[in-house]
Image 1: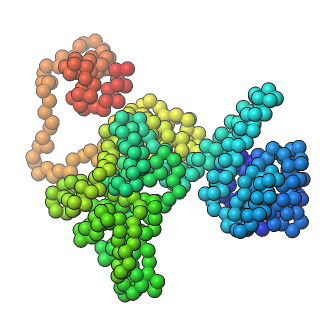
Image 2: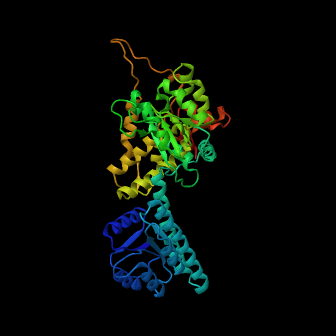
Image 3: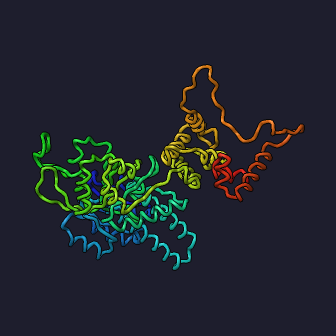
Length: 490
């Protein structure tokens, strides 16, 4: 959306311009209100943001002039006022201002006000269409505004870290459904388990934000990155003089910083065993003490734990407290590895390709079917993160219309290298070969040329008949993925 900004303070003007540009808008700035007014008379801006106190013309006068002008009378005008200047804000609203913002301007409040204005402008154009029967003109304006709205929402999602979650498989749909349910129960702790790269923090942020954008803090603490001697003060905070080298005024820990939001404990299996009862007490009583403190503090945030280790096994081995484990698993999400959700790979790869093309300015538009087959057959030990990195590397090195197999040769090369077993064979001792049920002498080749592809299809059909048409069992029997089987018989 095109936005006109008027402010005689150059620092404020620059800050507003940067924030609005990051949100996907096209700001035009003026430090002199008279020049801004003349420009607005010649060019329409859906939204005009102006300071109230300026030397040559104040904001109220500029507002009146804009509303009297044919070009800008339908523009939304947001007035920027100082704290405590409510009388001026009320006067501005009575004189036709769309909204007002207090200094210092909060970026989130600014983004929300701009989004409301964009929606308001959409409605204005729709009404104009009904009155003036100018459907084409309004459709173009509405499309432009909707694109701007989506850009802004996308920016807000990126800032919050939610991003786009692929949910094609039924298991992922269940996880997203449960995460949304847990969002509405902030007192319920959540444990997210899954292999490295499966997107545990993304799901944790989904639990935090739900299906909307949440303004409360999301505080993350990687338990494996904190020295055991500092862990307690990092989590609970400490009072002045609690230990040598502590700050004079003490310091708040992550429990306090989370406020009414979410405390995300990544790699929770690495939490020191002697501190786990204290975390359990926080979950039970919703209170805690700082290190060296005597004042009880309330804990009002949600706790989400995550890890790639088998906590249940660690409990049996005495490496993690059983009572804490059961308390954390009131809300339990187990993320499947990417190799168990192959149906999602084509959609994920396409999404990552679009994102990388946009970032790097390349020409890729699609993924070749042969490339998708390779991607679906890869085991992905690094899961979603590895898939995203693979697409980024291919786009970084190559540029084409279609992503072809040769663009990801590095992936198949690494797979063949990784598949070599790590064994030591004694000298002069033959390496054992894998045995098969079909004797080589039983295979009779015809004298005339034949199609290997037809032979392969014939073997697949016999295997399908062997398992009564069960594609999953057939794929396992033939040592190929279900997606590859589908490709061969389709």
